[in-house]
Image 1 (cartoon, rainbow, N blue to C red):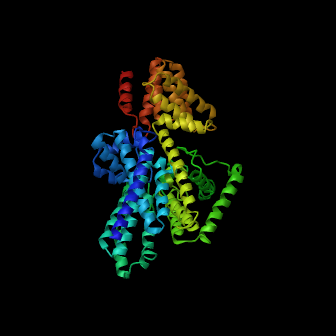
Image 2: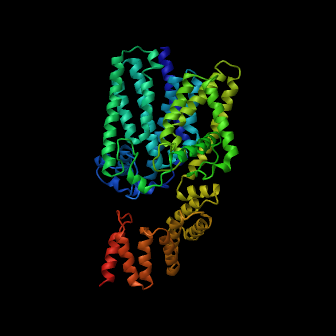
Image 3: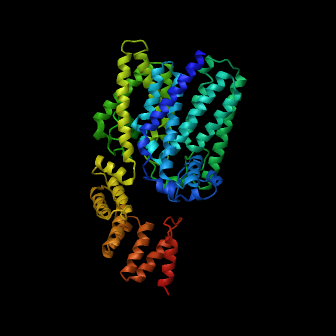
Length: 555
């Protein structure tokens, strides 16, 4: 009877954590789509085919963006939403928030299996539920869905395998392996849970449940089969696109090396001298979250703060491995290290060097270690425990407020880039993004055209390299064209093509401008050059239009 009451209390506490997570993100339900949502969700041709075809395609939307990512289950969720409600933004957002709430429940359950202190376990669940570090994972539909799905599946796999050991139930291990495979199909980093699952066969779970080596083998065999099946499917799929030459996930591909500038191992290791302290700052003081972070080219300029940060990190690790040593804290550090490694950049895959969503799963380990240390320093029954509870409550409330505010930044591209420009007013990336966002919404507000032009001109003024010039000049060309200033538009398309001659957008538009100016031979040459550019045509209707104009102008 007492055990049943305790189980009911545990369930209610977990549901409370989930409910708080949902409430904190409830104001994001009115958000629209932002960043890559248009290409990955709304206009992705892969989501208009057969669902089975998703398991033989890569996570990309263009032949210009070949990536070693094989995440068919993530795309399958988008496919299902497209069929069920046509990508209604409210329902897409609802699924994200609900998924985060379920993950918060599972994080609490994980903490409760590891920590005897109920307050500490609750703290772990609530930190995961409300910390603004996780807003990008929840609010960024295209970029966060894969991580949240992987988080759900790896938590389920771990908890089910634990149950299999304790209850000597092989079926739970089979279910755990199925969830593990689903996690792999959602995101590659789900592999990181495998060492932690295998560790359960050694310590500490096996100390609570007897079991022969044969049972251990039987429990682990499904995970080996799932891993093998996934790697074979992944290798076959990526190899068909020419972006993988070995069984290693996405490593050693000549095509990837030709498409991306891949920093050397030394540079990637040095970058983490900045990346890890930057993450630590975001965790401790999450008031300057951003949709994009830049690793400085010259770390010497940040020598003093970096040295201070690393002294703090070394001091914390020293404590955790000596006086603060405990199985829970070591488990938390292991969890963080295993899930952080795939997104650290040390093992290189194309993408951002650091992003808040990358810590969605790894941070679970940090919350476990932090709560465990608080529980050890201020144990239950200690006179200072009530003050600890009050302090923790205030911190959680402040974190929740920051999360609610951050949700509003993800309403659309305009709000997101406007926030970025406020944070980094001299960064060209933000001005290009904001200018493009204004231009996209020009039909809903005439003043947006002027705002777009202003932001794009700022981008050209602030940029220290030509990286953002083609995009800025293309958009400025569109603006001039909208206003009937064809010579002004031609100038900007010329500037874009001087930097990148194979810019399809600038090519097709320069052809149109030549026609407007009566320079028909040049227009034909432009259209023909456009049609000769290799690769698929990713501008809807542009190829047919160019072919028709060539036929018409050469009669």
